[in-house]
Image 1 (cartoon, rainbow, N blue to C red):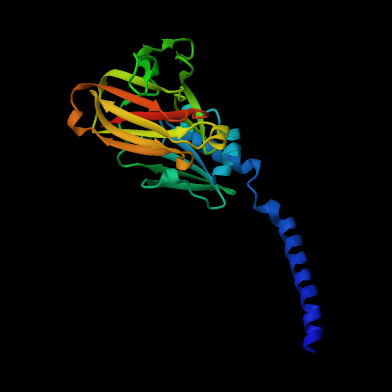
Image 2 (image 1 turned 180 degrees about the vertical axis):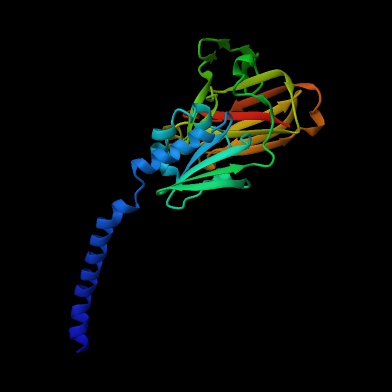
Length: 289
């Protein structure tokens, strides 16, 4: 009897699985948001959207679908933002009950369901105020290079149409690829045994200097694994020194600059590495109140 039951059990399990998969296939379309749902959701966002709002899609893989309906409002700057700190209002367009990390710490104003697409508007209590965006003002920087061992003279990099031409590399504003996500920043690939210096004068510093470091491009992270040395100086005082590695992703740093607030200062970023091959380093930085 036990042997006979054992022989039948796999067949019963197979039938149950087949029925489940068949029902799932037949009802799957009913669980998918249709064009009418997305169209109605997009109409709500457009009606209430204000300049400076952030639009996000959840889950993250629905981003391409969301941009099909709202792509004209999702600018390159918005899509490749360093973080969501400077945005006061967040429109979350979501499906399947997903939530975006960009809503964390924000207060829900209202939420509406349009079929299987939900539109939620969140308000942040204290969005940050940016006093200097170093990426946006790259053209105002003075960029030079010097031997990392200190044996040699500092030489200038020269402006061209897209950025600055250095000895063996090019420093430019770029939408970086970091962990398959777009990130707006300054691309400053390591140049041999040289240290690249990106210096800004007359910077109005607030209470914090916030930034992110990264290694741009999948193949750079695949083909080499040496760390990149990144340093920040204020009026020639080193205030930050880190080593960025392949698996660090979009790595945030915070510098307390309260003691520098209320006056203009010189801010310099330095990039170097012991091994320069495939070290396409990038960073973004902002001075914030």
